[in-house]
Length: 326
Image 1: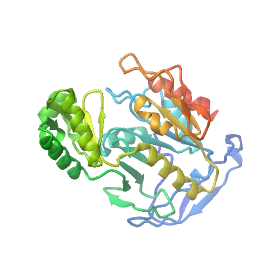
Image 2 (image 1 turned 90 degrees about the vertical axis):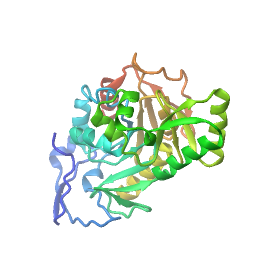
Image 3 (image 1 turned 120 degrees about the vertical axis):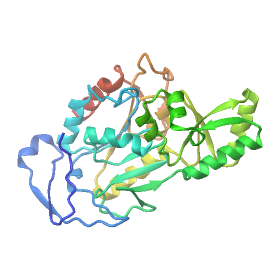
């Protein structure tokens, strides 16, 4: 799949500018855009100026199958987004290294949010404005919202010891133990272990009262606990809704056009950031997934409800995208 945007480091760069109305495609022109890059300075190509929709989407239980990582069934919508140069932002519970192979296969060249809002990552050459607080992380610029992983692991051990609770986090486990506890393949477990903000763990010896005590102690120290399908998670500062607001503001400043924020979620964990959208869709749970809340409720400030779609998974994502963009 060809990349929707061509990032080239030698100026000048010829960039196709997609019109707001696809019917005007034949009348479009080519624009020349000089590229400059630094550790905190990247360039958003003019191809992103035309779209009026900015799409935020959950990765797991929405665009991809969480077990197979397949996005089969979503190809038509992905191709249409690429053709129209419409940006779509991925939000995931996974690590940056876990989703890199998926993004390469998908041809995704837009920003993404990892580890439940712990980090925001920007492909090189994306924005022409400076990104406050950004640093170089591998081949990306990034904004760290969550506390560093080492601090989170240290806090987990201290809180557990102070409250006489037994815990086992990823940082305690060997690769084999992670494989045994998650059912992942060794390579996938290795990528999942490359954490930057969020520590998965489980209680090895604790009753309900001890767990409540642990959660309260973590909160008093500024740490959040979240119960997932398999593991508990400890983090501080990870916030997908805040990441979405940051990205929306950057896109507005870079494009100078009015953007309609569209969100597609795959589970109840996506409700906080879906409530910040102008148009929010929650895909129904598959038979293998935990059921959603029956009434997600209105979006504060928008007076709109989160719509529950008819079809789950990648096929539902595909239908939803095509319905939205027309």
